[in-house]
Image 1: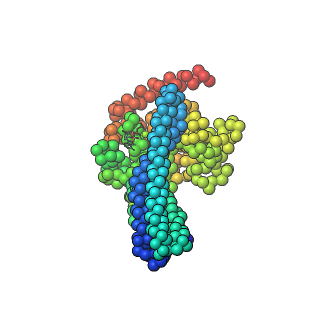
Image 2: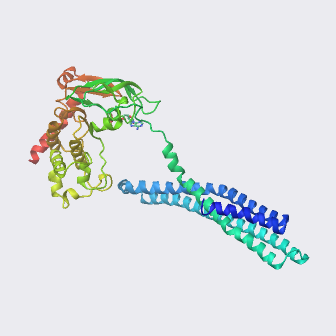
Amino acid sequence: MLFNIIPTLLKIVFICGIMWVEYGFAMSAVTAVTLVGYIYFTLAVTEWRLKFRRKMNDKDSEANTKAIDSLLNFETVKYFGNEEHESNRYDKAIAGYEKAAVRSQTSLAYLNVGQGFIIATGLVLVMIISINGVASGAMTVGDFVAAHAFLMLLVQPLNFLGFVYREIKQSLVDMEKMFELLSVNQEIGDKEGAVDLPEGQGEIEFSHVNFGYEDNRQILHDVSFKVGAGQKVAIVGPSGAGKSTISRILFRFYDVNDGAVTIDGHDIRDLTQSSLRKSIGIVPQDTVLFNDTIEYNIGYGRPDASKEEIREAARLASIDSFIEKLPDGFDTIVGERGLKLSGGEKQRVAIARTILKQPRILLFDEATSALDTRTEREIQESLKAVSKDRTTLVIAHRLSTVVDADEILVLDNGKIVERGTHQALLEQGKQYSEMWTRQQEVANYQEKLLQVQE
Ligand SMILES: Nc1ncnc2c1ncn2[C@@H]1O[C@H](COP(=O)(O)OP(=O)(O)OP(=O)(O)O)[C@@H](O)[C@H]1O
Ligand SMILES: [Mg+2]
């Protein structure tokens, strides 16, 4: 504004004034019309060009998304031999970008040519008027040169203004996506006056919870249960029953549609999300790691933990002997999403970082499902030690890992269909005992295999 825009505007006003006073109305009118025409043309064409820029940006992010997606999933691409399919997909997206970019560039040429044409016309008119003036003796040759110079004096700053306007408009279009993102409403926010979860024992209660991710499909139906302080409750049931959904609700990634979830009697909707999430530790079903060292990933549970604490957590999660075998030890980089570790190793890193977090509530969502029975048994011991005196919610497929739970809930299609201790459920002889018998047969077989190996 200070160094470019205001001086240019002043220049325009002064030059038009001088032209009028010195050389009459016709000359200043031509100058004014040229300037107004130039400005109008620039604004209109810039506006028209924006859609190419927008298209170019869309195609650019589309191409980028496809590239990232296929690079991240490179294993899947290779499993299905779809390298060519992927590169075609990328090619198509990048071709769209190319087309839009070319159109954006051609339209810039139109703009420049049009601007040049307007200025040239103005200049020619000014020269004709001044030549006539010189011929009729009303103007001197010096006036002719001066009029020409005045108009030229305007062209440069005008071009500059056009350039600045174009750049600002373009940048705004480039930022549109970001503004859109910023204006998205947070689905779950801290409500006004939300308080931190006070110190407590960590008693969880779900009362009459109804929930669905989308309005037209309910996932949980009237789910009620209580995990007393320091108790262990297990949730078992078929795939898709809604077990992981319960853990997401406890973390308040979603709000329940009906009913309430409380911790130590506080409705979690009245608590700050940070204090809520700080007090719960989860070993999720699919562990995703950061592309950094093993030490960093374990330390993620509590970023201020010391090296010794990280090593102790690794020991408790039975992953220390594996790490020691690695050439780089704790400094080994795990790869994107942790792809350089096996499923079981990833799970143990997740267990270690949850141990490090030392939350009052623990949530294990099939925490040991990717481990062989022997390692699982090893870890079960340390998990038991860690979860002693902590409120624990275990989601499990392998029932043998939850026989000691204070209560077992059998979830089917979002409803709790059976509940009780292991013994009581076996005596009922329904779904749970069926599952148990089936799994026992498999377990016996595995046991025999293990003995043979040993
Ligand atoms: N973000 C989501 N949006 C919409 N539907 C979802 C979402 N997440 C899960 N679902 C649906 O909710 C249902 C319950 O999912 P959930 O992950 O809780 O199952 P689960 O009991 O943990 O199963 P599994 O044993 O296979 O892990 C599934 O049918 C699933 O399709
Ligand atoms: Mg699940």
